[in-house]
Figure 1: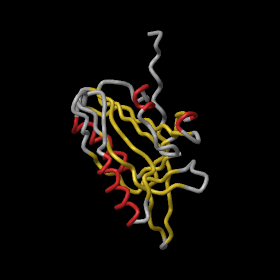
Figure 2: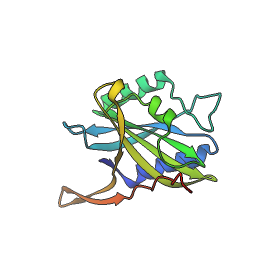
Figure 3: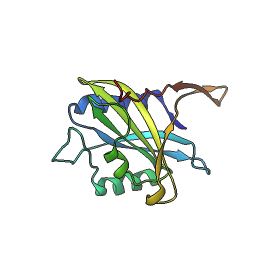
Length: 171
């Protein structure tokens, strides 16, 4: 499960709209439970898509940016818990290229469909496995967490985001 504040969720969708017709990309910083099956996003970090040859359907985050973001996160007690990118005018489902280029096992990979500069669907996929040879994506539930202070005690309200259905190749 992947938890977002509504503002962070809205931010990644806005990023996709801002970079349309090119893919946007970024990093999700937060925390993960011991089992690794529950990630909480504390903040999002926009990255520049440095993919010069096909930015409309591919993305690349400069490794120097990843190192910088990881260091900044650790200074705040946060880890990289996932990545996000957009699919301009394509489904919010992982592609063969997304799978081949996903290497951070245990992380979430969030994809937003952006149609004609408007974010429509957002889905998350958890990269599982123990190494590159047995990795696989699993659909992941996105949950919104709105924290409020009530008598000095945080109270969470959760609302699940339904997964967009995969396109039917028969149509």
